[in-house]
Amino acid sequence: MSYENDYFEHKFSQLDPWDYETSRYERAKYQRQLVLAQKFCATPRRVLEIGCAEGVFTALLEKTYPIAKIIAIDISASAITRAKSKTKTVTYRHGDILKKSDLLKGQYDLIFLSEVVYYLGARVPLPEFADIIKRLRSSLTKNGLLVLSNNIDVTEFNPTYIVEKPVVEGYLATMGGYLQKRWSRKYSANKRETGQQLSYQISVFSR
Ligand SMILES: C[S@@+](CC[C@H](N)C(=O)[O-])C[C@H]1O[C@@H](n2cnc3c(N)ncnc32)[C@H](O)[C@@H]1O
Image (cartoon, rainbow, N blue to C red; front, side, top):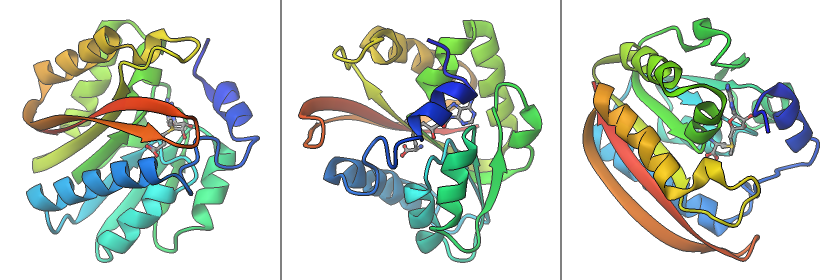
């Protein structure tokens, strides 16, 4: 499976393929990221969301940080078109961050990377994954933070390897090599829409 443009365009041929708009499970995950980000960085000037999908979290970011400059990136043009209709002030960048490093240009007080890391890691060998993390590190301001959220230990998906616990822990360990881990916690909750009991981890990193 190659997690490139065609995969995600196919995914977004369906509206809201991960139930972001309606799912209580997803709302709670978003809320936890926002509460955490506010605790560590209440008034960011520039915020980057990588993998914004249809903009459900992006709209929450816009509401939470009305004064900040918010930039959101996604590989799927269809997703960005839908995201634009949910927000007013956000700047969108379309493309694959593994192919167009210019997309990450800028200095950010907050970077959100939610449910994206394993797609990146599945496409490139670890040293190249590490290069992306170094690139993200250099996009953080001096006191900037990267908020990472990932499903972990999901064995029912096919293909399963991208979110199995040792795999995601490998990505987290690599990130810990280049960034300082400030905070991390695992959660377990039922996603009613899929009937799955899921575990996810939210971590906050600084430079
Ligand atoms: C599972 S969704 C997560 C959406 C959102 N971050 C959230 O947590 O609600 C993954 C998103 O990342 C985007 N994505 C995956 N790989 C990407 C890449 N290499 N460059 C930019 N966006 C990517 C996909 O199109 C999709 O919208």
